[in-house]
Length: 337
Ligand code: PEP
Ligand code: MN
Image (cartoon, rainbow, N blue to C red; front, side, top):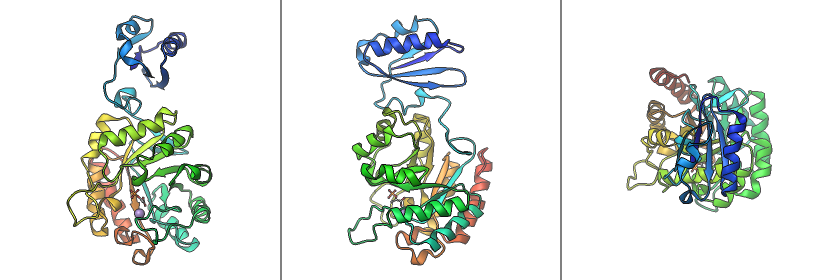
């Protein structure tokens, strides 16, 4: 249920609507736009008549939202969400690049990566310290030591940090080092983790599950947002299909579909999306052309010796080339990169 207030509605009028919704058993989420304030009510929607609200002072319109996700719906924030962290804005006109290794491996490696990332004017460094690996015998990540090294390398190069959290018990520790918490494909429906991340006031990068529909992705975002954490960034990272040439099938169409259905920023991950470094550049171009607000991409000083995901990881010269191409594509669609 959404109540859209009139332009210039007073605080008293807004509060009166909030109080009425609360008294009827709704939880109210407020989105204050430049023109309109929108009140999202989650609760017993079947029992209300929208007209009862439409006749209240200061109310422009009232709608029952039929989609199963409400706070993630474009209706809740038609102007779109910009996630702001320091001077970095995700969801605005600038296409933001988050780049770095699949895994943090050593101080030397992560310092080199940070210099490469910053050297191309990318603003965010990625790197996993806790790794979800298909095999329990594969490298599982450096843990807290890796987070420390990544934070230091990022600070030396004025970068932000995004790193993956695998379960809710890791939230306090990873939050202490990372600016953005990544929830990976395998955890997209870890509902405990989503709910706990919703209690924080820290941006979350939520990756689409390997077999998740777009609606399931938006419902996963809704779990986080219903806790009051509205800074959710979505990510298309490829889904499992019958195709075997690529590791996953990067669903580029999910980008404009999500941008239409939701106000949340959406980035593309052509590294996991293809699994092959020779396919990362074309899919990075495609993602930006399709309207992605950013890219998440793996880069390593020596990808052939990376401890994880080397085949899909760009070399530094390939990363430079990708950034040049992405800038050209961004300009063609009226953005910067
Ligand atoms: C990653 O970003 O390194 C990762 C494990 O991604 P995903 O969850 O998409 O597999
Ligand atoms: Mn990886």
